[in-house]
Amino acid sequence: MNKNNIQNYRFVCTLTFGDIYGQIIVWLITITISLASALALMGARRPVYALATVGLVVLLSLPFLLFAFVTTLLNHIELVSVDANTKTEPIPGNVSQQKPIQATS
Image 1 (cartoon, helix red, strand yellow):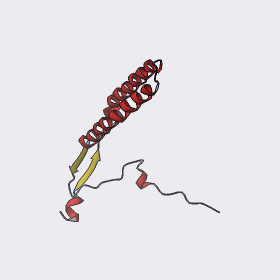
Image 2 (image 1 turned 60 degrees about the vertical axis):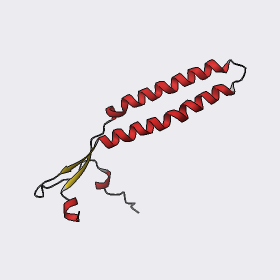
Image 3 (image 1 turned 30 degrees about the vertical axis):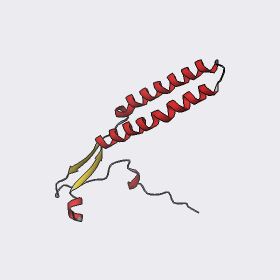
Image 4 (image 1 turned 45 degrees about the vertical axis):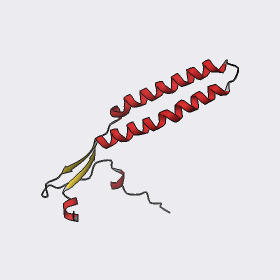
């Protein structure tokens, strides 16, 4: 693939907050349940089990959360072919198109 072929495609990410909103809610529910179980175990003879329970739930749930986020992101990345005659304009509000602030003295 040479440089001219790369310019005929546009890289588009269609991910919105609504796409990952459900995943965040499920993870928050998981953390809340683990904290509730930790509070229940806090009255036991060894409160170390309560801290271990929270740590274990967070440690085991983070890889699944990361996997869900990454696969959702990858499912929303598109490579769209663009006609060579079509003029592309910069996206409004894109950080890469903004000029840096210059200090005046």
